Amino acid sequence: MHIVDAHEDIAWDILALGRDLLRSAWETRRLEEDSPVVTSNGRCMLGLPEWLDGGVTVVIGSLFLPPRHSADNEWSRRQAYADADEAHRIGMTHLDAYHRLAERAEAITLLQSQTDLEAVLAAREQGLPRLGIVVSMEGADPIREPGEVEEWFARGVRGVGLTWAAGSRYAGGNNAPGPLSDAGRTLLPALAQFNMLLDLAHMAEEAFWEALERYDGPVAVTHANPRAFVPTPRQLSDPMIRALAERDGVMGIVPYNRFLKPGWSPSDGKEAATLQDVAAAIDHVCQVVGDAAHVGLGSDFDGGFGAEATPAGLETVADLGRIAAALEERGYAEADIAAVMGGNWLRLLRRVL
Image (cartoon, rainbow, N blue to C red):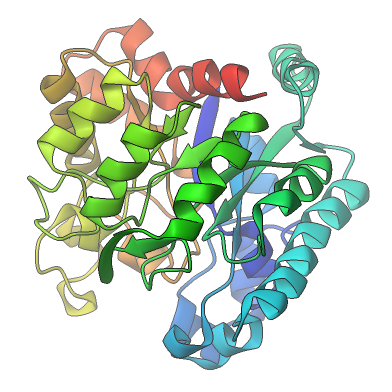
């Protein structure tokens, strides 16, 4: 069984937080003990040993940088942009970080083709330690105009989300409602030309529906949970979930307590949510669409929260495999569990790559 995690802010961890993700998450925690990084961003969950030991075969790694007006702490401000030119420059440094990471570790491959993907899968099946990373842009402001999509594609980007929570030049976000802008409508055909995966996460609902209608390439929501559990604009309603499945898209469930338990706060403690809550969110998607073929994992680990804000039983990315046991407890068949844990994302990524 291959585990695929559809959203991790890897470059953010490296550049904003100064973490070396080739070392163990536990070692990073030791080094950051009593550090203000932990106060703001939580206890580290990502590291190469944990990816490999936990059976995580593929990760979609983001290019995430916030607009300056929404940068609310020291670490956000280090990577924030004021305009499109600055977004382009900082975004390229994030992409550089992925290339350097792959150059430093033989076990890491940036996946730019089906050949790359199949090689990583085959190596894992032979017992060799390998991790494939697909790079995707979380918020499209680093693309200054549609003609630059080719440049980003040539450097390895294979997915683009038009916006982040605070909105972008291209679309409304979950904290900044609105439709696609004219620039967003113009950008979509350029993305389709390169078969980019369009990530609808963080989109305002109006923008979500418009993008889904206009875009004829592959689509996904890499990290969001059912609105039926936590009724906020950040999550997906049942009609949105069904529409995504009708396009053969996949939705990545986030094992983050705030997305699993309405009103959760740090004072409630890690144990207020369990792996069964994660399984329940996955099960809800399956019940809405009528199968287990359109849901997976999208952890968002280290994306502004750490281990203390994840369900009991999850300490690092190596523990993602424990979600399979929770699904088994709910009566899911082995084939459906394998699909949820990674197979559904692999099916979609084969179309993208």
